[in-house]
Every structure is written in C-alpha cells, then in structure tokens.
Image 1 (cartoon, rainbow, N blue to C red):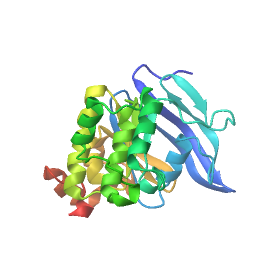
Image 2 (cartoon, rainbow, N blue to C red):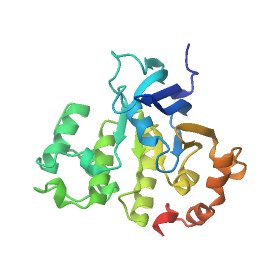
Image 3 (cartoon, helix red, strand yellow):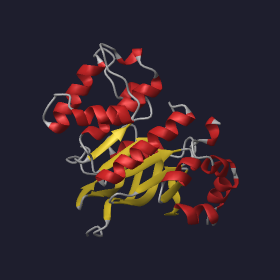
Image 4 (cartoon, rainbow, N blue to C red):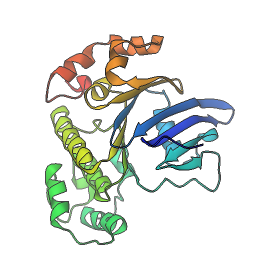
Length: 267
C-alpha cells in the first residue's frame, strides 16, 4: 500500500489501549506537504495519547493496530523495531519543562540542538533572524527558569525550526503565551513554514486557532476522530452531534474576526 503523492503524513486506523481499556479507536487522518492541519478536542479526548503514539512512545497507552506513513515510508505502530520518531518531524511540547534541561544554560542547549540538526554549533545570522522573528532576546548566561514560560515556549519553537523539518507538530501552542503574543508568534511560524514548505500539525482545544490557521481540521472526542475535512466546511456544516456542539459555541467566531487574537479563551 502507498500513500498518494500529495500526502506527507498519513495516520491509518490507529488504535491503542491502557491495559484493557481502549483509549484510541481507529484514528485516521493525513497532512499534505506544506499544509496546516488541526486536531481539536476537549480535555480527555485523547490528543496527548495520539501525539505520544506518533512520537513512538508506548507508555502508558500501547498501540495494537494501525500504521503511520511519513514521506512515503510506512511505520507500523505495533512494530517493536520502529518506535523512533520518523526523521524530519519536529515536536514542540505544551509544557516547556519537557523540552529543556533545567541544569543547563539556554545558550548551551541551543548550540547542542544546532549541532545535532545542522552539523555546527556556531551561532549564525540566520539563527539570529529566527530568534528576532520570535521576539527572543540574547541568551546571556540564563538558565530555563530565568525566562518566562512564554519565552521558553517560543525558544522551543526556534529550536524545532533550526533543522527545517518537513513536519512541525505543535501541542497546544498558545497555552503558555499571552493572546497577542501568541497571534504574532503563530503568524511568524506560519510564514516561515510557508517559505520553507513545512507542514504543520496543531493539536489544540482551541477551535478559534483551527478556524484561523488550519486548512483542514479533525474533531476528536472520546479517543475517536469523529470528523475530518476542510475547516471552513466543517465549521459551517458539522455532521456529528459533537461537532455541532463544539461549533455551537460561537466565541471562536469573535476570535477569528479580530486580527490580533487567536484564542477566545484568552480574551
């Protein structure tokens, strides 16, 4: 079986369980090259479990069915030999604590990341431009705890973009940011992704975020993707009861109509 020529990422029939309880049930969706796709769902929908499976992690939930295609290569979720994250995927976690070593200075962590993904730890003009675009100051001798949570998350975005990945996965990208800063940062990321032909997968509870940035959206609840399609059509004509319930909360329209706001919850 092959993916079509346009799809960069395809998740097919992913199912996972914790002990005997099914927590992901037959999930399927895809992301095209250069496309932005959002997975939207409330707390407990299974979004974090989905990401862990995609990253090759098998605890606490263990996949028992399904496959992941990336760049034309298949990885079976149940294979014990293929638990590593596919090369070309960068991931920015919701919690910056999961991205930094608290005992290492930020300058050292940036240089180590640059060495791994570019082959050189030297700080150059393109890296400075990336930091400037994300509104980041000089590292100095700072440790992670000496920067705000929002600045830490923006720095994680910068580190993720260092290696020009083919797919960037953002887990709740606005959660640690002020709404105005979030809008600016996400516009910067979208522009950079479009220039570099990087696909984006945004996992969020925020329907306004999907409405504003995503070409297609998957609605997730109770471990299932109940709808997946063009964002505009999904917002206008949801097909499922949960989709209609989610869309019926019209606050997302207010958020989208304001150019500098991405999250109605943050207003």
